[in-house]
Image 1 (cartoon, rainbow, N blue to C red):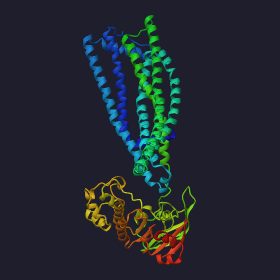
Image 2: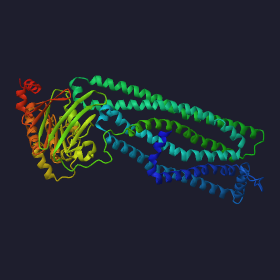
Image 3: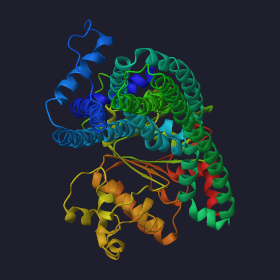
Image 4: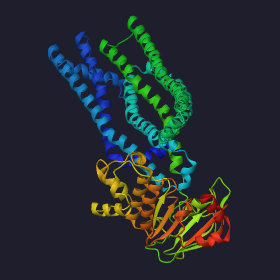
Length: 605
């Protein structure tokens, strides 16, 4: 229940529309009862069976209210002739039903603000929290699972919370009012009716527990479907290249089939609550019909035709709120299942965060120092061991080594995508864990081998992270990145939408847009992670020219597999199995005949 109470905290910003919605719900309850109550005098009028006035009921209590009500109605009816009464009653019925439906609409009108607001707030909080989590979290968690929590689980939470709110302010008042009326008219029979309620509650509780288990499994399955969709659509070129369409279709169909079967089971369980409640209601009505019918046949009943129809009508009106109130317990179970998944994510603490007294770096003045740095991922052995190195301002430092040596892990530590397991990284003497993350990353421009662009215009992709810049400034930067010529050749130039992940551009074009983005940020520290390794010779030449312009006057840290691109670096670090095994300039390393010479010979043999 703790989970469900958490869900209700999201209703706080919507107190006003929630209050209005529930006020109109109470008015709906009143006029719903009144619209049925007006049937009683109408029937009595039509059958010429108006109640006889009671001069002085014995005592004022629940059991005498029936006599008081019938006496007051009788006294009022006797003031008018039958035709006038008929007109008044028909008009009153029309007005009561009009107001009943008006208040029902107004309740829905205001509740819509609450419903959509809760969805919006939970999704926004989830999305914002995802951005606070460290990069390591996303390497362990399936992307489809995260998407499912934001899209599907939030919807289930909202449906559950709103169902409960609606039920609390609609069903109990209706049940109380209708039950009170039934007790007034025949308390013995009504007590008999209510003996069936505990049985109904027990059955609905059993169904609710089963629903919770199935709901959790269904949410896991839809997450699996979302993951397959994300992976397959992103890798469609590979799927087609390897003729794996049938395999992927079959894989999807298997998961979809299991999800469908689970939903069928869930739907069947959910559907049980309604018929069970309704059938118990029919049993109640049957019991009522028998006892009232028995009293009428034997002449023991003092009920008029109108009172009889009114009593039966109230019983039938009592069934839907009882049915809905029973179903709300199932909704609570489904909401709790979805809420647990969502709040588990929200309760995940970021591993990379600003310390309370973190300082703000306003620039880069001297050096980046690695001091006895060790690092490992959560599920791995150490990938970096005892790294001691200093990168001075203005230097171009290249990092080379075999695949898996730890090159990318090393540079990921500088912007604090991950924190060191042991040791310290300092910028201008400050431990980067004591520096504001935003100010640290503002000092850096990062260009990677896998260029990530957004499904937006070329202009907006270049501007990403730099705010508003006049188009003239964007064009100037694009020229420096060797991107202006191909951009102007696009259908709408800088306003061309480049598709998901920049799919409408070639690899070299995407890379040059990425370099333009880094140039526009104008960072003092530049990190290049194999920025040209996936390009053809012509594209590599254009990109390398752009990179050379990008590195001018900046401290640059470059990972490269193509050793021809880093021969002019001030220093080259050679990493193997997480350790720095060589260091020096290109010519010196070749003369040493170590690992660098071996890599060079393999590449230029």
